[in-house]
Length: 361
Image (cartoon, rainbow, N blue to C red):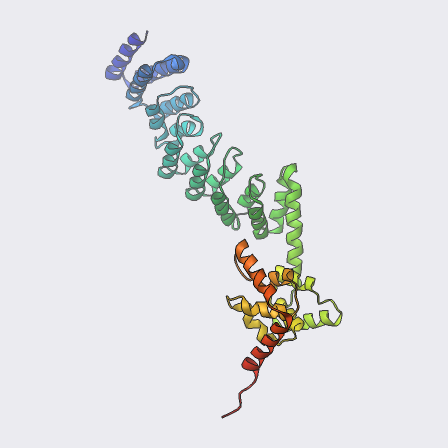
């Protein structure tokens, strides 16, 4: 049967008009779909050669139907799939890009980078997308492609992909909504996304989130609202911070816990003012210690304020971008070696050296 079919197809390729060529293409497609799993490798390759010969000169509407039929077929020669997937008309390429299992990850990556938006949208519709492919689509595609990717539950999105989405979502409320309801969005990035979103966007994310995520998202939203309120109540400038700290001192509310709260909230003026009061030192002496990269001066000030290591750690480390566990252990050991009396003497000497006016000579 197959030798007879091949002869018929060869005749169609060499002599047929475009109309007969379309009919032959339809017939071969029927046979491939019906018998593809029983074909040998050589026979499948022969089908591929015949099909590639028939597609030349066919109208786009014929090719679009051809691609749609082969997109979900269990066995399709790879050269045929690639020919369809690379076709410049997305009506032809789209079904194969969206459905065909025979395309490799490398094939799809190449197509995502070399074809346009409509092809990228089709790829983004695939049942499963690996992390490398989603990264490429997020980076190369426009907002509609990103919407399609992030809405695809079968898309695996890496941390790099989510970082890009969260960055863009700060200027794209709809992307923020679609990204914020994904169960695989890391908690830290969810927090960042919500912090950058408007109140109305946060509310929509909560309302659209699945029940399993709604509680966590709402906790973040509530926490952000509280943080926003605290920021609004923060003192503006060093003088306001000093006045606030003096009030806390007078009411006996200037405690280690309050200093830790200032440090964790990055209220640096309040930290400086509170540390100055607790260490009985001028603000002008403490302020430079918060700015320099070295930790020893600030460590002396914390010890002079008789702070526990837990409080000193928040003050010292709160101004650093990252500190390893080994570095924290070393700082703790160094802090334990400094006595309260030695720290007070050091602060006194620094004050005399840096703040006492020199006599005219």
